[in-house]
Length: 387
Image 1 (cartoon, rainbow, N blue to C red):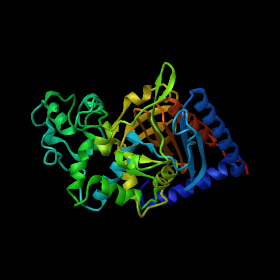
Image 2: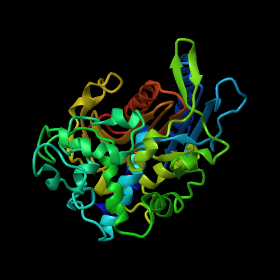
Image 3: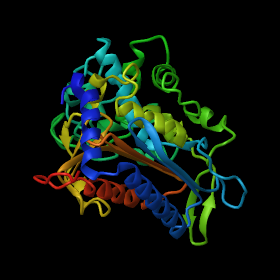
Image 4: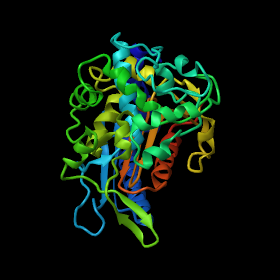
């Protein structure tokens, strides 16, 4: 579907969906009540400290739900405005900002990165000079996955890490294979900042968070700490979940993992990608970042997703899953003490977000099961909906 037809395509898809399932209001009520029970049951089974979810449909929150506490052992209930760390879901914001600048003619996806990050060199001579902006955003720079993330986790600063990449040999040519990166992805920051007198973080706030009315959202550690209503991180120990201090490490890679947001904020984010704020996230931007650019074969073998996926790709800051005969756009995130996942179906005009202040794969289970139920509601190909 072209950018100019996306908005009308979503509307037509929803009309078809309504006709197909019949008595849509009753079906929705039943589905969301069942999902709410499944969500809370899953959280209770895993003894998760706190979590929130939102189901978004046609630009309106169909259902939001909260569970548990912001800090284990304290009476601090999770609310719709409780701020969580989004971790790698931050990449969806960064790629969107880049796509905006590309649409405006301020950047080009073929922009070479070496003038903006001269310290980033690899063992193979000339490889770094071939790398383009699109390779950073699609994780196709040709490196082994998560190169030097261990140093970020040990508290190293980026200027100290970058020279070490000279020790790494590429595993493929630029754009030829997928290898998920955090450090390399964060190199979009100086490229974006070359277009403005403002910092990358300020541009995210000015161009995305504020226009969308994401009132609790921010980027960076200071923004997280400034919120009283914030979820504290928890790690799993032999004695159960233990509240710990937030780690600043991945905040140093703000394009890759720096955004904080509440579930009410993430409703706005999903709505924008369902086409309801084209003045902020245009159809052209959506098409640009959700185009399949590199195959991600390893995603097909993840336990939670293996039964459902026919294929998987990465676009620019977004994953694209072929969920049987259907397609969902999604991204997950995880840093110490937090998990997040956002997904939506352009076909149905439906989205789901889950945020947690603990690390558990239950978010993947609940997301995969949600989409299985949603797509199973559709009539099989070749059948006619009852009237």
